[in-house]
Length: 90
Image 1 (tube, rainbow, N blue to C red):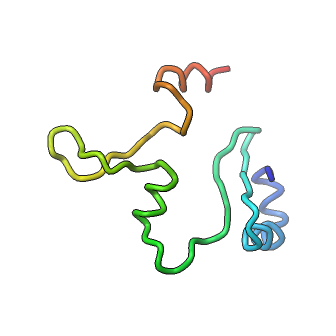
Image 2 (cartoon, rainbow, N blue to C red):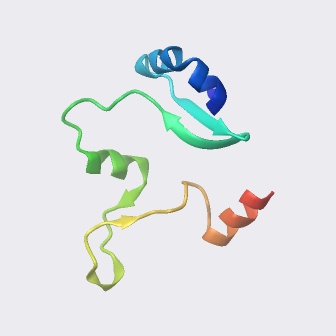
């Protein structure tokens, strides 16, 4: 389900109930997705496990030994940063 930020503000309780029931709600601003609201992860799932599953972080070491995790700034399916910029400008 997609909902504008304005509509979400006006119907926040109903939108939260939908997310609580398992529906994923995409919040848009000026017709562009800006946030995602969904059911909370069960207690016991670590934040790291949820970020790995969502593809936001990977288990690859960072170049230069700066730490064990690397943030993936691109959404799944985007080939390169330049492709993402070009697509966003359309």
